[in-house]
Amino acid sequence: MNRPDRDSDGGSVDNSIPRVTLVLFDIWDRDLERTLSDTLQQFFFSIGERIPSTPQVSVQNRPCPSINPFEENIGRFCKLLDDAPGNIRIGVIDVGLWTFSPPPRFIFGQGCRYGSAVLSTYRFRRETQSRKLLHLRLSREVIKILGLACNLDACEDPQCMLTYHRAVEDLDRNRYICRHCRDQFIASLGELFNNFQQR
Image 1: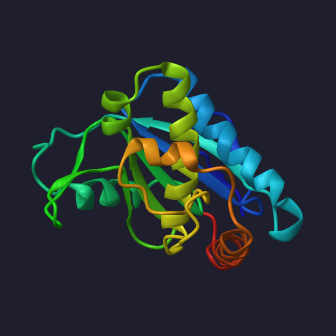
Image 2: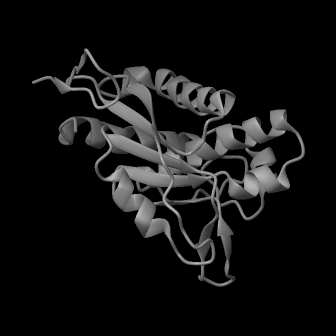
């Protein structure tokens, strides 16, 4: 059954095609939008034969709510993702995601419920000197955030994109998605794309 598309007028969504939605909260950087979207699309094409269907990656722009940057506010963004379309929803924000978990700090991102997660560009923009390096690091981090949306554990291989990152420079060591994490991705994506009706 097709339903009206929330992202556009005059069309409908084919519910048989899985959908991954990037929800950009007050981020109007079209180059960054393209980098994140293209990275996800390339990843899905790379495993296309092993998942039920290659998903469509779409982008939604939304206003960012006013928040206190030194409060744990991940729950607020997770709730905002609940009504976004798609089998998987990744929120992208430019405000810091603060956590009181020792040590208190701004984090790169966090998973919400199964099928959604939030990526914060806050530390990347402040701790990366060049735009090219910023985009490279964020293209690797969006894969990690997709892993969080798929409930994947942090990998112990320091060159895998699914490893735990303490500093933005840690992403510079990432070279690939290891075989174990790729297999976990495929299992989780198969479940998300088969068992969750298109929203």
